[in-house]
Image (cartoon, rainbow, N blue to C red):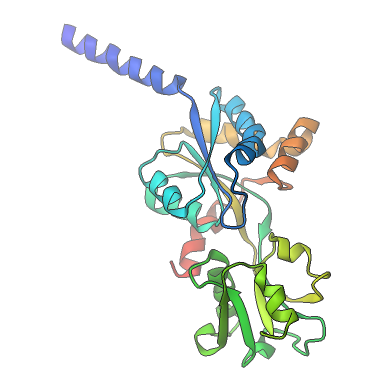
Amino acid sequence: MKKQLFTWILALAMVGSAQARDLILAVSEGTSGGTDHARVIAKYKGLADVLGKGLGQKVNVVFIREFEALEAGMKARRFDLAMARPNDFPARGMRDYGYQYVASAQPDGQCLIVVPQDSPAKNVADLKGLRIVLPEAAAYMAKFCAAELRDRGLDLAKEKVQRVREQAAVPFYLGNRFADVGGVASYSGVAKALEKSNLRVLHRSVSQPYFPLIADQAFSASQIAAMQRAVAALPQTDEGKDVLKSVGVQGFTTDTEKPLLALLPWLGL
C-alpha cells in the first residue's frame, strides 16, 4: 500500500513538473525567411506570449533554420508547438508524428503562374510547349505549382522546365526571356513586386493553408481550444494587431484542419 502511495505521489510530482516547465514554440520560416536567431525570436515573442497566456504557461521561441532539424524535432517530440513553412512540414507533423492542428495564418497561400506583360498566353492551356521556370523540384512551391498545373491538364514531365534555387530568380529569367512562364508563391516578395517586374498573373491556384501552427499530442482539447481562441482574437485589440504585424500575417483561422490533412496526398507525398 505504501509503495502504491509513493508511486502515485511521484506520478503527480512529475505531472506538476511537466506542467510548470516552459514550453517551446519552434518557428521555421523556410528558405525565404530570416537567418538571424535574435530577430526571429523577437518577431514571434508576442505570439508566444499570447499562446502562453491562453495556456497559463510560459512559451519560449526557438528558431529552426534547417528543415532536417525541424523534421527531427517533430519526430522526437522536442517541440511543444511548431509554426512552420513550407506547409508540408506541419502537415507531416500531424500525419506522421501525432501533432494536433491549432490554426493557420491568413491569407491562405497560392501558386501564382506569372508571365511577362506582353505574353500572348491567356490561360493554362496556352502554356503547353512553353519554357517554364520553377523552384527546385524538391521545393514546396515547386510541388504546389506542379500539383495545380497537373489538375489543370498540364503535365510538367512533358514540358520544358528550368529550375532555379530561389524564387527571386524567376523575374530575372522571365525579364531576360530565358523562360516564358514561371511559378511563385503568393506570399513571396516576388509576388508583391510583380508590377515592378513587368509581370502579370496568368493563373491563381487553389488556396492551401499557410504557415500552420500545430501542437504536441499531449495537449488536451481544452488547451487546443484556448490557443485557438487566443489567436483568433488577435485582430480585435491593438496589442493583437501589433502581434500580427510583427509576425507578418493578417490573422489566423481555425478552419483549415481538413485542407491541411489533405495537402500531402494532393502534393503526391
